[in-house]
Amino acid sequence: MSRNSMAKTVIFALAIILTAVFPPQRLHAQEENLPLLTLDECIQKGLDNDPDIVRAQESISQINNTLWTDYGSFLPSVSTSLSYNWNSRPFVAEYIQSPSGDSIIPVFVNESYSSSLNINQNLFNGFSDYFSLRASRHSKRAIHKNYDNEVLNAVYDIKTSYYEVLQTMKLADVQRKALERSQEQLRITETRYELGSAALSDVLKARVSEGEARLNVINAENNYKVAMANLNYLIGIDIEQQYRVDSSVIVRETEYTLENSLETAMQYNPTLQSLRASMDASRNNVRAAWGGFLPDLNFSFTTSYYQPGEFEFGDIYSANHNYRYGLTLSLNIFDRFLTKRNVSTAKAALNTDQFNYHNYVNNLKLLVTQAYLNLERAQLAMQVSRDKLASAQEDYKLAQEKYSLGAATILDLLDAEVSLKTAESDLIDSEYNLNLAIASLEKALGKIEY
Image 1 (tube, helix red, strand yellow):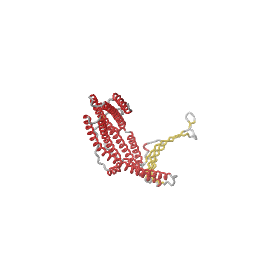
Image 2 (spheres, rainbow, N blue to C red):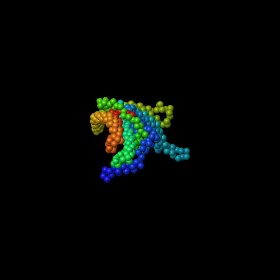
Image 3 (spheres, one colour):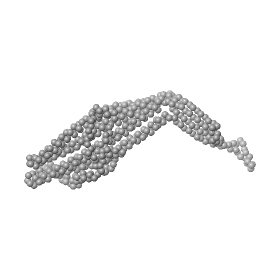
Image 4 (cartoon, one colour):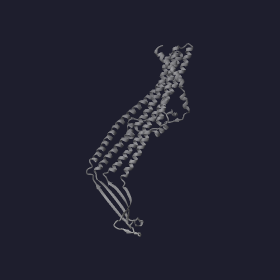
């Protein structure tokens, strides 16, 4: 026996064993009673459970707290105090004679009450507070765009995984149909062999083809199970949970051109918008740092109340009151180069943000151009795959008729079967690639379509 014949025999035997353990139709039959989960539902579940989105939401909460602090810098600071003092001391210079004749040292007790109210308001600090507030606003916009980018990435990943589930599911159906054709062909070949119109080699070739078809079914179903587990992981549910996906998802019609794609990306891409906002924030931080070279002007108001002796509420208005108003103008003459360091640090951050922004503009143009060209190629490949499938179907029918009439060999029929299966798989792959190309382009554009 030749090496090729031994290999085919081993493949056939392995297919029989695996088929007994994993029946090819079992997965397909079980899915009919499972609940349906659409693409929109998967995306919603994924957005609710994505850890990156949760972290982005926490960043938004933190920047909101920072904004409260920046707004508060324009408001006055108010403080108050209340105090009570009690003091006792003996007066040893004098003695008091008690009725019993003992000498008693007198004790003098002194107590007082006081309160104060202090108000301070910064009137001018070189516009540092103003530019710091503007920087925080731009930082908030950058964080919001980072959140949008996390949502965009999550939607893209879930779409890709969902399309992969559809792809592997349809490829498994193709392999099942190929197995059915192989089984039917094996039955016909064995019948012809029994009638003496076919050689034993034809029967063996048909059996090997049928065994390989069983193996292909098992591989395809395993790929489908892996794709389902990956989708479950992305949407945040148990990877063993089973459901049906919506197989009616079709390729959407698009009207994208390279020109409007580039224009849309420049306007809506969240990463680019985040970098632009970060650059604006850094520019305002530079202006805020320059404020350290300018003078400060502060207004203060203090009122205090003091009442010695025992507290009587009726005397509060006649007690000692003190009012003080003040304006303080201060200029930092030498701060050991601290302000200079702050300005240099802010400028360095601005230069880095400007470089990152302009560099990403070119990178985004490249991403959009590649995504658009991939979309054009995927659209053409889709049409070619349809024509290829139609041709392969006709060739298979013709090969069947010729083989039935004895005008073709078993090899001709098997070649036609392989071509048909390949064409069916290529059409499914082209659908997946086209959906993926659309999703990739929309991700680069910053659009969320679902």
